[in-house]
Image 1 (cartoon, rainbow, N blue to C red):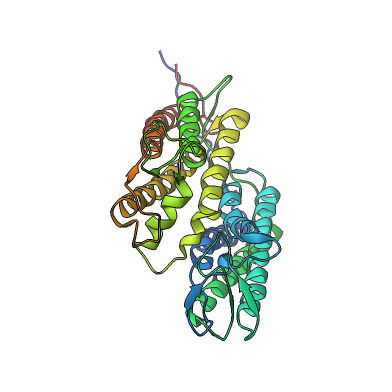
Image 2 (spheres, helix red, strand yellow):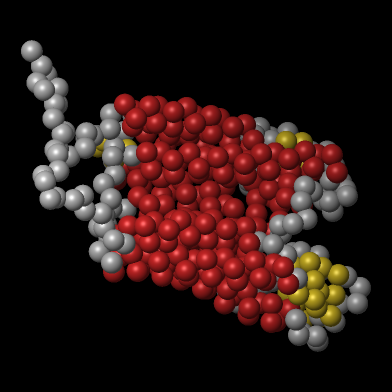
Length: 361
């Protein structure tokens, strides 16, 4: 005969306690999330059109070779997205608030770099040097025109992050306490963690080690150092260049590889160190894999563009063909997606019961 399950009832005169700052806190987190996701999109638009009398170029601050280089701009515009999961997955509000503050710091650095670099590009007579051998690599600014819509959008993202962080602070000050995260802990590893790790390592190998397109190359597989060709960021550049004029393709140089590598590293850290599966963790991995899949599709489009229009794109004449990078990436993503399905299934089936519940007989 099974036990009768009971749930706690409110005693007469007792009311359910709801933290006063909960709504304010959650609105703040949503605004911080929207700002962090929008930041790389907004900051990789074109911000200024410059001319030297012969060439007219639309530029993003990441195109400009300053003392701290394009890498600093890539870090500043992507770190917010990498920090964002901690705003939702950490238990203690003070740690979530710290993550939100770090996102704001990165955004502040990005807007500072934006103003500094645009200032340099807007002074007639100054010599401007571009990164990664862009053509022309150096030229003297004769005229510059800011693109006001991009500037206002970037400032709007910064304002959104600031308002969100303030609301989080207000919510914490009004007595918000941490939320409980349902899920289950694993003693050794989580279901699908090994396969997911293998898939992510394959993905990283395709981004940093394996070639995606080569000219007159017969080596298989094509590694970055064995043949004249293009790795992931090269074909990603041409994929963006040939399919949209809204975003600067130089984002493929540092920003997109940083997002792929940084996101994978954080996921592996959560899988093997935290060892706790929650719907939030599964959602984070799902969004990461969706973004990584999209980047790989863009890179594959770049392979097609290079193979069919190499001369028009300024590449050396020859027979450009796709190489093993796309296959390695596809295999890694397939393994990772299948492992994620297993992790989702285990998470939804093995959630820890809420506090106060009793096990049935």
